[in-house]
Image 1 (tube, rainbow, N blue to C red):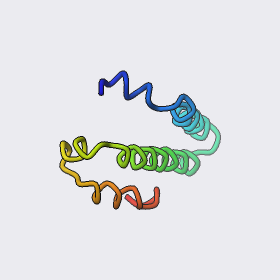
Image 2 (cartoon, helix red, strand yellow; image 1 turned 135 degrees about the vertical axis):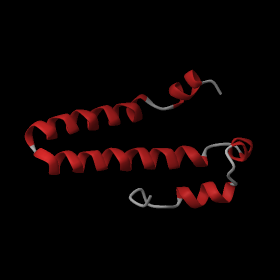
Image 3 (cartoon, helix red, strand yellow; image 1 turned 90 degrees about the vertical axis):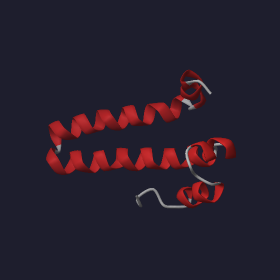
Image 4 (tube, rainbow, N blue to C red; image 1 turned 180 degrees about the vertical axis):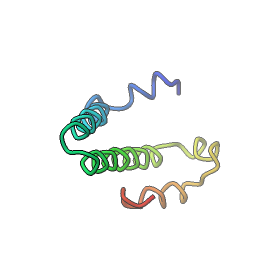
Length: 85
């Protein structure tokens, strides 16, 4: 799948969430100080982690083998809560 196809496979709503969070990080940096900025940066990490795990289980067995994972590995990773690395 070409990179362009991958981008279009993600819904516009999903793509706009990180942009909103980035705007909030900027605002927090100006208004809330380091604690607010750190909290919003953590929210960005959590959002990205959850998205990546959802996408991982959608990969075909061939694609998983290509990156050195099994279906069981992908499902075990996807079963983790978003806050756990």
